[in-house]
Image (cartoon, rainbow, N blue to C red):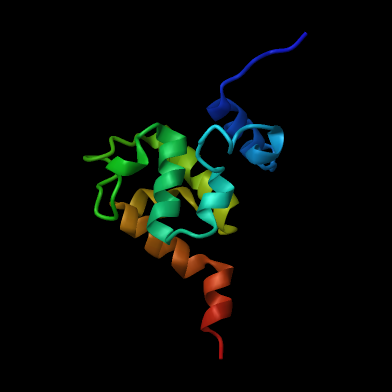
Length: 127
């Protein structure tokens, strides 16, 4: 028995499983977006955090800016903040405590936090 899923769902599943959606067949040929992993490697930190917020909350990444207020503009609740924190830990390899994310008011605040804790940032700043 074969189950048909949309190309977007296939891409999301491939991303979650660490695969390449293009390798699953016709994903790239049909003009679907590349996987988040492929896109996130070449984008700035604000965009990467925005993509995490989009995945966790459903707020379209095009509606998110560095100055977006997490509560007032994006309407992110405490449960979504926990989801975002977990996704940031996975994506950036940093530990995020509940109070760290609670202290963040804007997307840029999250970016600053991640950059201050990122092992990659610490390595590139050493002489």
